[in-house]
Image 1: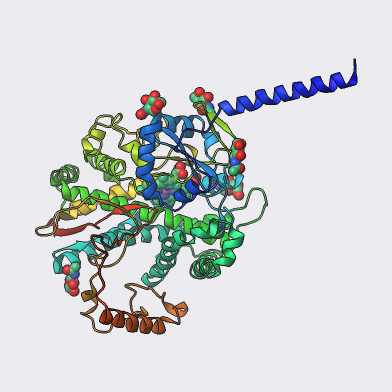
Image 2 (image 1 turned 120 degrees about the vertical axis):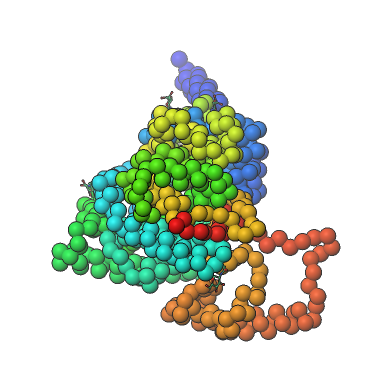
Amino acid sequence: MEAWFIIVVSACVCVIVRAIFSLQTKTINTPPGPLHIPILTSIQWLLKSFSQREPILRNLHAKFGPIVTIRIGSQPAIFIANGTLAHQALVQNGSLFSDRPKALATAKIITTHQHNINSASYGATWRTLRRNLTSQILHHSRIKSFSGIRNWVLHTLLTHLKSHSHSNNSVRVIDHFQYSMFCLLVFMCFGERLDDGKVRDIERVQRQMVVRLKSFNILNFWPRVTRVLFRKLWEELLRLRKEQEDVLAPVIRARKQKRKQGKNEGVVSYVDTLLDLQWPEEKRKLNEEEIVTLCNEFLNAGTDTTSTVLQWIMANLVKYPHEQERVVDEIREVLGEREEREVKEEELQKLPYLKAVILEGLRRHPPGHFVLPHAVSEDVVFNDYLVPKNGTVNFMVAEMGWDPKVWEDPMAFKPERFMNDEGFDITGSKEIKMMPFGAGRRICPGYNLALLHLEYFVANLVWNFEWKAPEGGDVDLSEKQELTVVWEDPMAFKPERFMNDEGFDITGSKEIKMMPFGAGRRICPGYNLALLHLEYFVANLVWNFEWKAPEGGDVDLSEKQELTVVMKYPLQVHLSPRI
Ligand code: HEM
Ligand SMILES: *[C@@H]1O[C@H](CO)[C@@H](O)[C@H](O)[C@H]1NC(C)=O
Ligand SMILES: *[C@@H]1O[C@H](CO)[C@@H](O)[C@H](O)[C@H]1NC(C)=O
Ligand SMILES: *[C@@H]1O[C@H](CO)[C@@H](O)[C@H](O)[C@H]1NC(C)=O
Ligand SMILES: *[C@@H]1O[C@H](CO)[C@@H](O)[C@H](O)[C@H]1NC(C)=O
Ligand SMILES: CC(=O)N[C@H]1CO[C@H](CO)[C@@H](O)[C@@H]1O
């Protein structure tokens, strides 16, 4: 046979085979989604926060079905809005869907290169960290050993609320809730009661990182370029991280010292277990930065999530007083003749209606409307669609809890719905009807602890006080994505609030009520100059012009934030002690 003939035939075969293969790969597309115009739509999505994406995604799901793809940056981002499919992915195919996307530039700093549980890839590092957390600190016998601290934190909270309820008609509760949950986790983390100043210090460095996180996002695009372009921002990120290390490392070192001297008072803390831990592959102990990162994760994961849900639940109990009375009646029955104003942890088991209230709170107001982004460990064909390894997969947590096909009258607060089937399975191992904690291998490892905290605090809060809206007020259950603040009517622009106490101390040397310039040794050295510039220019600008919105327009002062979905109008209540 002629050589040229063989060459031509094999070339043809090659072309045909390639065509067939490319046809095959073409038939498997990523899930449907809106028209993608390269660069333009990517940037549009990038500029939107999670809360802005949610209603758009809801519309896309109505149009395209329960799986959709959008393109954020160059990556396909797949969103699943249906419990059946979430179960198929996270539970039935858990080994495929439990990876995390590669950490972006800023996340690498915060997680010391993905060395914590939530950001670690699905592999040995993740398994070691997660297993050690769940089998040690979050094991139910260990959780029980912390009951003393829960009791102490509860009584501190009740005392604070009592003194506020005497002097004020209206109490803003979220800050108290947040601080209480934070104290619980600080104790579990370090194994001792730190003094109030130290706890506030840790809270401050944690919060400032969380609050600033979103502004650092820009550094994740073309990191090499933006790091130079936004050098100040990059330096701020490094500085905040350094501040966290400066505050947490001494506490970790002190604990290490104490353990050496055998003075750990029989308490095993999270830091203790981390000091004993070894990386499975590198066969070395964790270094200090890695322990700081893991403490960060532990403290952040359990504070705002739990206190946000606690606030939502109490708000609903104020809005629906008969639900509150029903919880109180149930407690009264269990406590019987006992006079004391305390519901003990062992007694929570006998309070099914209380548990139903907590579950209903988590269904109706999950603090995160999405889980953390997942990734697949290899390209996967899922329900005839391609889920590529280089994309992300997320789940519409709130949508699932509000699905009218699954829940009757889904937007109503009706704890009774959980009273039929005795043990509702919050982990979704058989089927997913809601997933406030996620599901499958990446399910929140703290869900048991979180449920205990919620049950214990809700029970004792309604047992000790009658919760009512302040005189003439009502509870507004609107949502807002945000973190929280320390002021009365904090979102209003009310300069009068600074007219009472003559010299407001912007340096926060006595107490920090706000810290736009930071505080302490690293306080912005330019704050006096900045204040002078602002005062001089504002005074002269309003003296020279009358400032108005353009004809027919208005000024929109909205802000955006992510993380937890909090009450738009923080719960203000009137508390009357029940005795
Ligand atoms: C009401 C309270 C809480 C809620 C609603 C909640 C919810 C969640 C959710 C939705 C995830 C992501 C799951 C996923 O990506 O699929 C998560 C992950 C996580 N949570 Fe929680 N959480 C709460 C409290 C806590 C507490 C108290 C702790 C620990 C003390 C904790 C520790 C973690 C950790 C370490 C992860 C990462 C798990 C992993 O990636 O393997 N959480 N949580
Ligand atoms: C989820 O979607 C699938 C396929 O579209 C459908 O068969 C199923 O009924 C849906 N499940 C829920 C809980 O909506
Ligand atoms: C609460 O009471 C204190 C004094 O006990 C008072 O200074 C403060 O303004 C009150 N706050 C509110 C929100 O009413
Ligand atoms: C996931 O699990 C289901 C049921 O076990 C199976 O039918 C399916 O092929 C698995 N794989 C994917 C990628 O969905
Ligand atoms: C992602 O992976 C898919 C399939 O493996 C591939 O076709 C696509 O080009 C990849 N995209 C990027 C941005 O790497
Ligand atoms: C209780 C537990 O799971 N401990 C594990 C912690 O991690 C190390 C590996 O560094 C394991 O050897 C332990 O068994």
